[in-house]
Amino acid sequence: MKNTSSRNTLYILILILTLFLVFFILPSQMHAEKSILKDACKAVNQPSTGEHEALYNDRIYIEAQNAILIDFKTGNILWEKNCNESVFPASITKIMTGILAIEKIEDLNEVINISENASGVNHSAFNFNEGDRISLMDLLKSAMISSHNNATIALAEHISGNTDDFIAMMNKKAIELGAYHTNFENTNGLDSEYPGHLTTAYDIAIISKYAMENELFRDIVCIEFDDVFLNGEKIRIKNTNKLLANDYIKGIKTGYTENAGFCLAAYSDLNGLELITIILNSSFEERENDALKLMKWADDNIKKLKIVDSEEMIDIISIGSGTKIDIELYPNKDIIEMVHIASNHIEVEHSLSGGGELPLKNTEPMGIINVSINGQHIDSAEIVSRVSIDKPYISQNITGKLKKQTIIVISIILALYFLIIIFIIFKNLIMKKRNINGGNLN
View 1 (cartoon, rainbow, N blue to C red):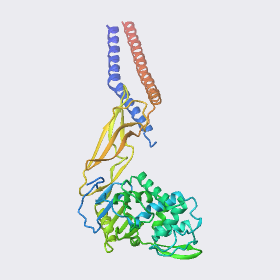
View 2 (cartoon, helix red, strand yellow):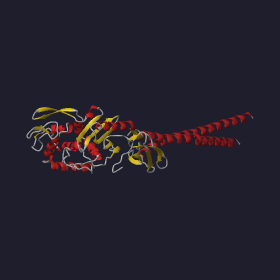
View 3 (spheres, rainbow, N blue to C red):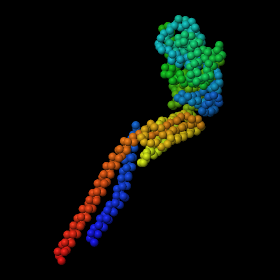
View 4 (tube, rainbow, N blue to C red):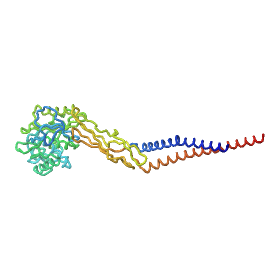
């Protein structure tokens, strides 16, 4: 009976130990596994109306018969009026002459002689005589700042040998830039003898945008006053663009002929909004006002908006076979656009390409985000993980940590079993001793 009682006690203790293992030790082990996975992920998640239509059709009254307003950064047309109509560009023509001179002339400090063809006044601020000596840089400044007509002829002759070949170069460049409705017939925009010297507001806008991307061109066209030297004598020149008095307007060119009316191409940077404004066939009184109206409208209504934020999480997915790991997904870039604060309808759609597999690189595309404004696709961003997980490394790392914890748990269990056995043996010895002592007493 006593042996049976001892065995029962042993069974009860083993049962208690087993229950303790099932309900306390194993759950804590599972929790530890999850914690290790979480820590592993955290460890690798350290920062490692026509052909060209405008986006908006707000009512803006301007005197000009033709106009366009574009976003300098994107080229998007924000507003336009008859921007596809063929018109005379007057001295706006010199934008193309100037940018080609910068691109084709290797040494702008070279001094050249004025030819007979480039001599005379020709509606310019000062006279050229045949044989006059002037640097190519001063010719460029004279053309772009004071709108000197014969300076463009001298530049063309130096680059191409004659004006006809240079004009062919101008038209070729226009086609390359996408100004398909432009036909230059001279280097300066004088049109009384050139009825085919035509362009559009849209074409002038994209030519202006291209030219203003050149640093030297930008530096020249924003100069209000400068000195040039003709035969060693200093001549003061003044920019024809009155709008340069506004610190946010930084070029680029004015123009006038009877056929073209009063024209203006302007670059402005106000409150982070960079614009190209083209005014064609306006009046003397309203040319600058027309441009300022369009710039003010843009400043009042068009704002820079971060539509997609690369710091904002898009989704969470679980990857891996067996034990799953939750991965946060982010856009790989910001998408910042100019939007109309009153009338824009912005749509942001994202789609995932499916669950990823280990190993995972943080540059691996997991999906795409598409942004549309008023139904027009504007930009896209890839969806990526910021986590780079090397499957073998993490598996070994987790296995090593789990193995260590398993050894500890088994050691505890064996120790408990050993203590129980010692306890039972010790108890039996005491009971046996009592029995012997009891027998002696009888």
